[in-house]
Length: 514
Image (cartoon, rainbow, N blue to C red; front, top):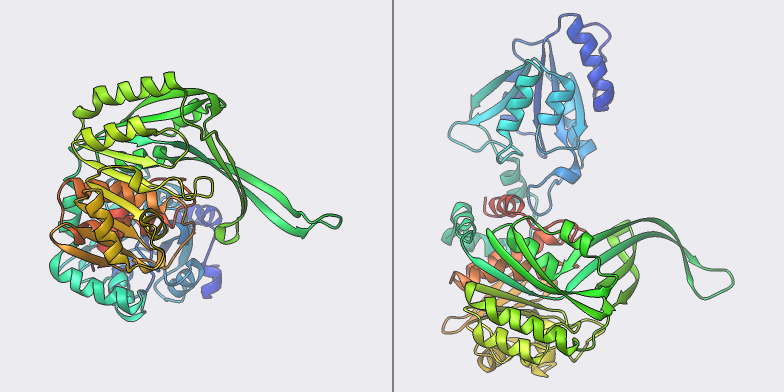
C-alpha cells in the first residue's frame, strides 16, 4: 500500500475524495474494512473493536458522526468532530478517517463500498453505538455493495457513561436529582410509559401560528438614520402554535384531531396542510376579517439571536357566524376524545362560549394559556373555570394570580384550587419546573440541559407530551421529568423546525439515566 501517508492530519479525508482513493486501492486488490460511530471518548472497547475490524484486511476506514448529527443527550459531543477524527487518525491501526453527516453508517457504506463493515456486540457491558434501529439499513447498504458484516463480540464500554461520570455535564443540582431518579426509574420503564400513550385519542384546540425566521447579518446602525442595517441571508417558515402542539402529540398518539382558525386573508392553508403529520385530522375554520397569525422574526444566525419581530394578526373576537360554527363543531365531537389539549395563545380564536365547552365537557382538559407582548395581562389561565392539567410558565402563573412576590408553591396551590386542577406544572426556564398534584404536593425537576439553541417552542413541546402523561395518570415526578426532557430536546431545535420525536426523546432519556 505504497503512497499512503501515516501522519494523523493526512488520514482525515473528505468522504468524496476518500471514495475515489478507496476505489483505486480496491482495484489494486486491497481489502477494506469500515467502522462507524461517534467516538466522543476513545476507550479500550473502541481499540479492541478497531483492532478486530482491521484483522484480515489491508485498510481500516473509520467514519465519524458529525457534531450536528450526534444525538446522545445534553452536552454531547464533548469533543468536536475534528478533535474526534484526529484522535482516531493518531491510532496506528486506523488508515483513514472521514466525518459524515449521518447517525447511521448506511450512507458511508454506499459511498465507500467496504469489503467488511465491523460493529460491536455487547458481552457483559454496553457498546458505544449511535444506532437505535438503523442496523437493518446498514446491512441493506452492505448487501448492495457486496460487502459482509463482521460482528465483533467483546466487552465494550460506553463513552456517554464515562463522560457523564467524569466531565461534569450537569450542574450539581441536576446530578443529584438524576442519581435519586435512577434509583426509582430505569430508562426502559420511562420509554414503556411513553409507548403506552399510543392509544389516547387527542383533540387539539388552539391558535395556528406560522413562524417565519428571516436570518440576517447585522451591519450596525445605518449612517444616516437610527435604524439597524442588516443583510438578508435566507428565510424559513415553521408550523407553530397549535399546529406545533398537534405535531408533537402525533408522534406519540395514533389519533389526533386539530381544530383551529385560519385567516380568510393570507390563509397559508396549503403550507399548513403540508406541515402537519399524516395522522392528524385537521378541521379549519376561516375568519374573513383577518389573516392566519404570522410571527415574522428577524434573526441573527449566530446563537439564533432575535433582532426584531413583526406579528401579523387580528385578535378581535371571531365574527359571530364563525364562532357559532366553531363552537357547534367542538360541542359535537368533544365526547369522542380521551384528552383535549387547549393551546390558547390569545389571538382571538377562543371566546367565552368555547372556554365553557372546553372546561366543562372535556373528558380530560389540558390547558396552556400563553402571555405574549400582544395580549400581556389580558390572556390568563384564570379565565377558565376548570381544567384537569395546567402547564404554564412562572410569569403566566404570577399574572393569573396577581401575585408578583407570593411564594410560588403557595400561589400554585391557590390557583390549582380555584381552577379545580388535579395536576399543574409551572415551567421556570433555567430553574427547571415544579409539578403540583392534588393530595401529593410538589415535585421539583431541575433543568436537564444547558445547551439552548432556541427557546421558542420549548413550552409547547413540554405541554404536548406532559399532557399525555398527566391524562394517563402517571405520577407527578414522571410528568415533570418527561416534560423537562421534552423541553431539553426542543430547545436544541430552531423554532418548530421539527417536532420532539420519540426516537430523539427516548435516546435523550437513555443518556440521562445511564
